[in-house]
Amino acid sequence: MKTLRDVKIGDTVRIVKLHGEGAVRRRIMDMGLTRGTEVYVRKVAPLGDPVELNVRGYELSLRKADAEMVEVE
Image (cartoon, rainbow, N blue to C red; front, side, top):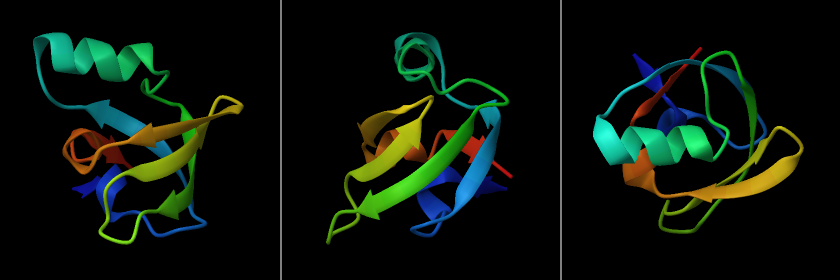
């Protein structure tokens, strides 16, 4: 299983599944990270947290803990 945290800078991936439950999962979906969405990884902070993404035409910063809940291909 490959998660959004494992993706290299400059790669584009497609979301396959969201893990997690309740409010955490809802917050991730509210940010536009839903199944089938393409995500481009722009930057990763020096210590790996946060990850900067391009999703649906806007820029999004996501914590490592949240990025681990997004399964990609």
